[in-house]
Length: 628
Picture 1 (cartoon, rainbow, N blue to C red):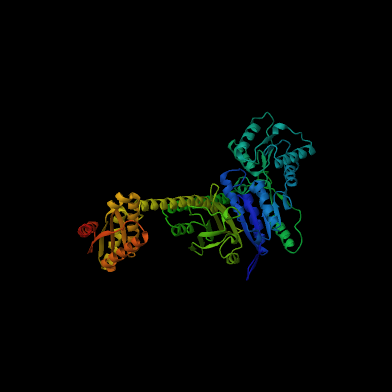
Picture 2 (cartoon, helix red, strand yellow; picture 1 turned 135 degrees about the vertical axis):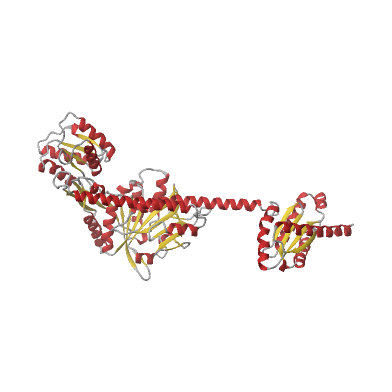
């Protein structure tokens, strides 16, 4: 349970994959609808592809299950048949049990869990009996699923059983394996049509996808359903609604499913342990493909119109995503990217990134291996507004979680990653009654690519900036070289012009560098050059420029308001202090010339440098004459 000083929320967690598919969406929606009605909040942790294949991309997808904070959950529902990787489902269940969270397993069985199972066999047998006993069909062909698959073999046995009970001999040529999808079904239909056996009166299919494919192929051959042959399906997928004729099939009553699960959770919350098993039966739906219901042309037209609107919506969203991709390429800052992202996603959504996402180094401490201990809100959108930059503890899932739960009943969390490199996660508020998970999937897939490109672009820009900076610096002293001087002096003279003041240009040359090199070695000469550069940098007023033009030649520029005498005195005192402390066998000394002016161009800066050079050489000759 989520508990704060001011609120308490009962939380149901759901772990699944492919919520955009009809089957998973209907189950999640039924549980969420009933749960919300009974006062629960739903946290859905979803990957948009199943995790069957052990590949890098799926490792990144599975990271979302590392986000779960079991301490706030009252119960966790897992859908292993959707996830399709038992090791992951078992690990989720194990972690839940370690935190004392009860687990409900839907459409499968797991150790120490309440298992929600579907009774397929009874209702499938009813469909076969309806075809044979009600319609009186004697020549009945069967398209099974995958050979050896438990569900497929169970339905074959029901088919054979009803044939035998009605005195109909089983003929192996009337059985084919369509592998539960359309392409193999086409091959099975071809064999049926080419068979020497008399044409069937009915074709029973082990699922709706194969039945829809069979209807399409028969229609292409000019064979009418149900006038020439009856066709039935099984499992009640959404696509069946758009088939003509509508299929006689069977489907789970999702309202009953949600009600049974939430009732069990309610009893658990009141101290009654979860049952070991909850069984939900399929219901037979008699329709048009067996001839029991007439085909209404108006219904067909309505379904076509509905399908058109859905396709149009999908096409519109795809165009929206193209625009999202195009705009993202022009973004150079997090703020710019967050703004584009907010206009492209759902109305209430979050994009949260690991705090080391744009860093060159990976933080070692992680939350359950995948996420940093703290996350950063890359983008949050709400009420047509957006914000970015907030940092929060990963275990909280979202910033201000209490406020979020007070406003939203259902939240979906989805992974953001590039292959197995985890970027963070996205969160969306969703309606259990109507929500286009397919659009969210498209947005997140695009966001994965955009975030990876943005990260690489940021790193490249930083690398280029660092490279440019290095090219503008003198490698020995670290102050500007000639290139760096001319690039940055423009800013200084522009600033001085706006302030209505001029600048001082200093030409500085070391004295006796050759003598130091000859007597004490070039290492000592380099040490002396570095000392002068360091002392000049410290003495330069804020905003001034120090540069080494080569050898022992230096140029400095400061604002006229800082005073030439003041700068020269500071440099002289600093050199004297350096000589006193360095304990070197030689003293460092400089000759300096300077000129003031109000230059507007680099040529005028060069003219001031030449004038200050002349002053510097005059001083250097005086220094030499004194030493002589």
